[in-house]
Length: 155
Image 1 (spheres, rainbow, N blue to C red):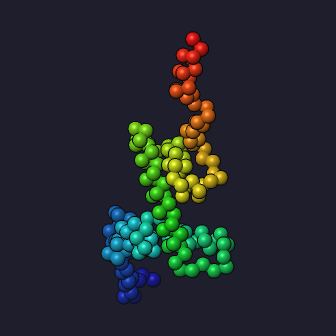
Image 2: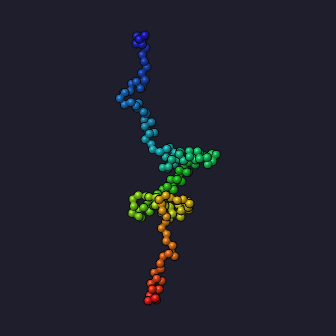
Image 3: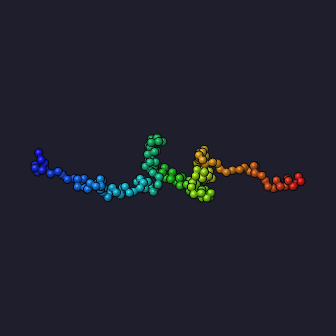
């Protein structure tokens, strides 16, 4: 039986009236706003760069406690962001002192070992390709005053 003959018309939907060339249906303006924002919502509210949601989910999955509070992810993200900024600032200063533009593991080690609080934090840590702090004990250094006076007495 012919549908047109019976007087039946197909219902036209939005997808049937759109052009076929693009392939995608135009989205609403609200959907476009959601795509343009960067970072997660909780990180943006807290004014942080580090991901608050990821920190919170890692706290939950790590089984550090039976319950995890609302602000725990924000606190952890803030602490991690502060420590990262502090270490990078000190390492950048160390690389600038050595007239280099790139921060290497050596400069990270120099920065953290020369800072008292960071040194205490990473007391037992070995950084690969970091080396050691330059240190020569005073006993091994030659004394200029005694070395010249002893030579003059012998002659």
